[in-house]
Image (cartoon, rainbow, N blue to C red):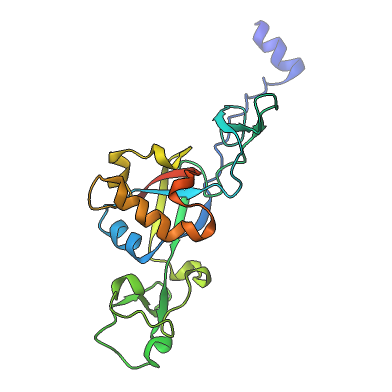
Length: 216
């Protein structure tokens, strides 16, 4: 009876809003030819990317931060939030950019047995350098930076994100990075080949975003 009176004068009880899940984002990421091969073989399920702004002191967990981490410049300095991972969060998708070309650019429309073609949803015949390791002439290939979304053949789902020092990589992580053995020396050489000229050499032990992923 009381419920009927309340409903008559005050209307129905307002519904409790349902929390909305963050939208799934779709971002590009560049991989080397060697990494592409390992991803296609399902041997590479991790990648490490250096923080663009390296903290001078340390990084520590902080749940209130957008990234879940904070950094300090000195013992007596306040903690500052580390911005969220630029590659996304768990559940987000990464579409892979790589060296590529079209049939017309590769050999002016003439087929070649040395190129392995892929046909995209746009029905345009495309070629990827990681499939043709013997053909490295830069005249044929387009820089990954200029690869449009429709030309990408690989999509990855982020399954885990964390921050750590580069030297914290474990033997299992080395294998997940697509290396042929668990010896970190091989990974260190690969890291320097890709990152040393950018100021993030192995010896400097930079802070890195660790992304774990699976092929979609």
